[in-house]
Length: 273
Image (cartoon, rainbow, N blue to C red; front, side):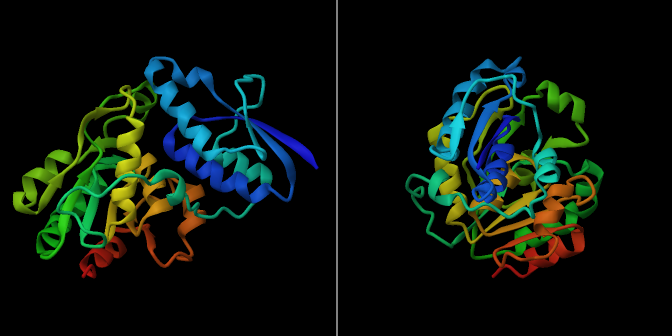
């Protein structure tokens, strides 16, 4: 069998789903040579050690060979999906990403997680369903609500291109509108240019993995990771994220709902018990 060589994006969500896609080609290729696109580290050099460690966790030899060869063609996950003509699947990477003990007071299956960062869902769409969302969250009586993610988004060049209407943080809304005695705040101050801490990242993954439900608004890295390790309720725009629409539109995964409209998303939250 032949080898496949590719230069890839460095986003956390990209890496998780690229693994999920390329794992499906083991009957087609003897080896995949994979390199991070080094140009994407410009302006965020501290991010590189985290990315390289995460790549080492996800892309293990002998099937994968991680290199720094920048001559490989750069392909996004959408490019690879279309080139390789594979029906994409949801990855399952909990055994790789989840580590650590649950914080004191949290018990498996007895709390809900909400991620603070929103991407690829316009802010006016979120504002339209926000009142009903928070009314439903306040009515969930027996579950603690764990907040994960950042309190402030640092705008990289990529984020600046997307704009504040397409990438934003809902931390302030969560602490302002939810009862303080229900919140377990495990957020960190900022992310974007500042890299994640690997120990904290794996701990957060484990918290999501053991949650009764994870609630995610929009796409991005937190959506990709939570969909691959947890029982997720999410809303995205299928038209903005065609690859993920292809993965989730058929509702093949009993523990993951990725809605394309607020009605379906809110109904799922209303049914949390």
